[in-house]
Amino acid sequence: MELKLNDDRGKAAGSVEVSDEAFGVPFREALIHQVVTAYLAGGRAGTKAQKTRSEVSGGGKKPWRQKGTGRARSGTIRSPLWRSGGRAFAAKPRDHGQKVNRKMFRGAMRSIVSELARQERLAVVESFTLETPKTKDLMARLQTIGLDRRLLIVVDEVTENLALAAGNLSGIELAEAATVDPVGLVSAEQVLITVPAIRRIEEWLS
Image (cartoon, rainbow, N blue to C red):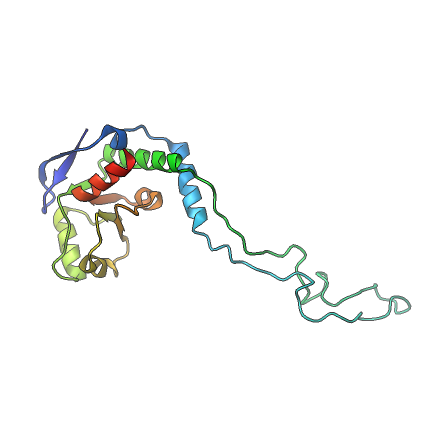
């Protein structure tokens, strides 16, 4: 199949031939949902921690004798029933990761990029570089192309000038073709991608 190629002004400048195996597969919502959910779960810190009654300091002495006080019997002031006591079912650090094999991940990525191509949300350019690390230069370049919404820029390699120029912009993300993730692709309204990045993704997904 072919993708429309744009010039620096956002106008048509020919087309790029891509593999149907990578950019022409059906939309598989269930698979994409599973992979995106697993990717987000893998990013969770999972560092929440609370103390049980055995980990809370103090409470070595019985508060009062077992009988004769008229009060309920108690063995420690660190019981979960007491203020400043331990938690009955204390949260512990854990891994929230979900297993997704390589075949499923690549299948979801094929489906995502294919749907982006079908919806014409892929803006393909020959290259995308900046001579200066200035945000205003990047914004002027994007406005010339006609991209001003929530945008993901995918390049073969992120240069220092491009990283510095896009660092202060909300709604604009940068990604290299080798490390692009499904969440970034799904959440972007438009994806600006260079031809070398397409070739890298095509080689990986084919």
